Amino acid sequence: MPADASVVRRLYEAREAHDLEATAQLIAADVVWHEPYEYLGTLRGRDAVMGAIRQSMVETHDTFSLHLTDLLASDQHVVALVDFSAERHGGQMRGREIGVFKVDGGQIVEVWFYTAEDPDAVSEFMRG
Image (cartoon, rainbow, N blue to C red; front, side, top):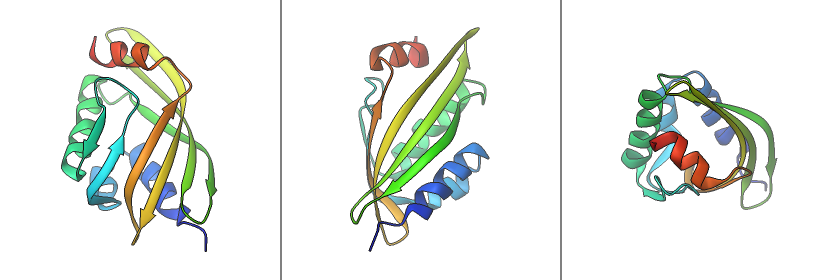
């Protein structure tokens, strides 16, 4: 039976709508969230993930956006192809990433993100 792709789709719908409550409900309390960016690294727990999401919203004045382009599901994982963009300090950033999600019991329990962009450049943009 394929992994539950609807959970990942709902995550990106909630993120696009800036619905933090719906976002949090889809993330397991003990999630492990692997980001390729130096300023984030591996986040452990829903509170850490939601804190990072809130921080990105604040730092980009709510311009950080994610657009789900495609979803693929296997027996064990859901893979999301996502376009992202943000504005900060008069600059603009656009890129693409892949998220490999492990879903269990209707929640995301682990995810690994891979970016097509230079992770150091993204880190500099978001924290510079």
